[in-house]
Length: 222
Image (cartoon, rainbow, N blue to C red):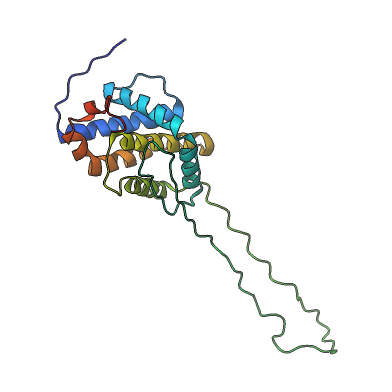
């Protein structure tokens, strides 16, 4: 059954409201396979476009999501072509932990050649600390920072199009889905707020100049 909502005036504030609504809808739609109707036609179009992006870029998105989730994300370079495979350049610095030797090597106080002190010295090497376990998931603040860095890299060349915007929303949905299914974290709203915040700060003017969110229909990838 079709639904009708009052037509919103095409203003910057309304563009930002729709950005927030679409982000919330997408993260819940992708992460929980939400069967509820999209809140409006723009969100409905975004759902359809995100589904297409998730299918076409499944391998690249899964790789990036896994690295972000593991907390090893350092750097991300976005492919200049949204229609090609996602190009992910992740450099993680390995952390080397060296155990300090405790109490020297047993030579402190001189060596005991032949002399029996009557006290059995413990020459066992110190027990090294256990290896640091990988962070099971980034803290919310770190995750938000990482998502923002991904978004910045995606548009670092100042090329904006609907395909990239939809891919950013798809990435948000993929992260939310992973956090729910693999980590048991219900942080969809935080992810949505982060992504819509970036869109509203950096992309809302571009969206408004092209007639608002209504222009996403039939223009994805352009």
